[in-house]
Image (tube, rainbow, N blue to C red):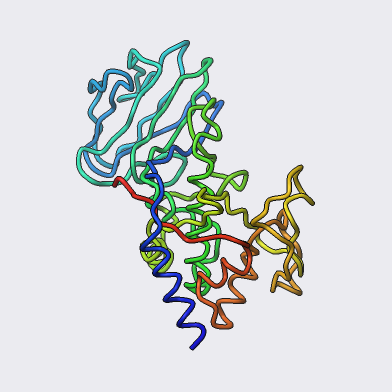
Length: 291
């Protein structure tokens, strides 16, 4: 009975709590490279990033080599390189589809900059679609769906709290464990996508602000406060038993243990109870998504 009461209270809090809208996120896929390749699953186009003028129309499922050449970007077509006349391009499908680069498929747009004669490759993607590529990359897809839901809320909170973190490089977050591992559409699974959709827009807040909900693979038995790893103690992160005894410590140990979250889910905890266990004095709020 207590468990159902907690769920009802959480639901009411979610319905009553609204915070500032979130936006599409920019994910850095590659940087400081001389060349890459792109492709579109449907007929697509390459636009000038500043004027939005079409520069070239791509064919479906055809790879195109893109290189930095002096201060511009060039494209290889039928064995020859042609200048696109700009250092900033956007690759899109004309219809809804996927984009290819880095040996993966992605949703959203691919943006390429020539910065100091090297390329930076960025995926501009709606936040929820970004999370669809994060959850199966951060947690095994066969784990308990309540752990996946907890991971989705934590990852969403981390992403929004860190928008602009790497703006000097032209994007928000990396696609690596330095921020959150992101495998694009190629990594998506039915269950992890369901976890994202069933928690759509839900974030963790402390005193009205979205928190960067730090997490790690396993604590080795007990999580640590943030002050044990970084310079500052955070009021919403305390040391607690990690529920991951017997699993080698992997990660900084701050916040949610992913193995611990799955073990708690297997014991009957729902996503909100898992998050309330690992993060203290937090509330659940819903972002006003614009997509």
